[in-house]
Image (cartoon, one colour):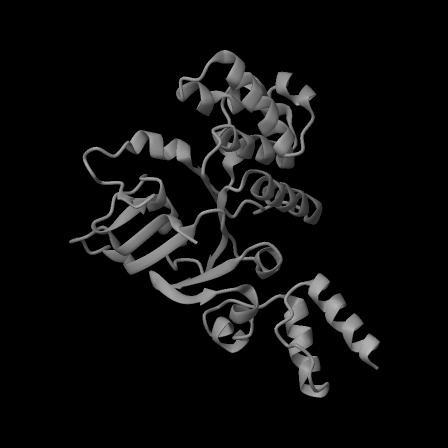
Amino acid sequence: MPAILETRNLTFTYGAGTPFEHRALNDLSFCVGEGEMVGLIGHTGSGKSTLIQHLNGLLKPQSGTVLFNGQSIMDKDFDLRGLRFRVGLVFQYPEYQLFEETVEKDVGYGPRNQKLEPQEIAERVAQAIADVGLPQSVLAESPFTLSGGQKRRVAIAGVLAMRPQVLILDEPTAGLDPGGRAGILRQIGNYHKATGASVVLVTHSMEEVAGMVDRIVVMKNGGIEMNGPPPEIFSQAEKLQADGLNVPQVTQVFSILAKMIPGLDSTVCTLEQALSCLSAMMAAK
């Protein structure tokens, strides 16, 4: 599939020329295909946050380039401001960025900056709130009176209302309870299917990416350590563990079972795949 967003030989160093110099990205080439959902994982300090801040121009390349639809975002004729509407970035704990008097005003902040007509802004706000699974009645409320999970959804809705072609989420379920995490992930998946937007999901949870994404990119020391579909990545458990990561619990179980049951698929990485695999084995007997 064609790449909508791409980095080529991207290098970035914090505090260059000082005693605190730290190279966060090292000659990194990365891409996101049109309509693709990519899981970006890696140990803390691997460079994930620095990478995603380059993808919508918040950080500028010191070396290498970032391309959107094949054009360098550093070209003189490139609309860098417009890129931030087309590549929506949801930071970790985005609820801390809520600031308006009502949910309606907060979610509509991005569309207003896009200079849209009031009717279209209202339609986008209503749709974005529906996309994150909240009732329309919440629009009249102050965002500061909502629960933590509701605030998180409102913050995400504020990015969805701009209708980005690429949605990037940095640890969107951090700090939420299991029910809250499942709800956020379900709504992200629904949005991806309904709109065809590309999605980059940054997370530490192997279970989260296992059942959602088309491809997993594992970062280490500012570069890409592994890149492939979930079964391929999770089949390399020892390598992941050496990088301070892990594999889904169901994969761990099937890896053990595969040593005792000939022919059992050890690359299973979701409960649905596990049930299907076991059902097929039972039917074959």
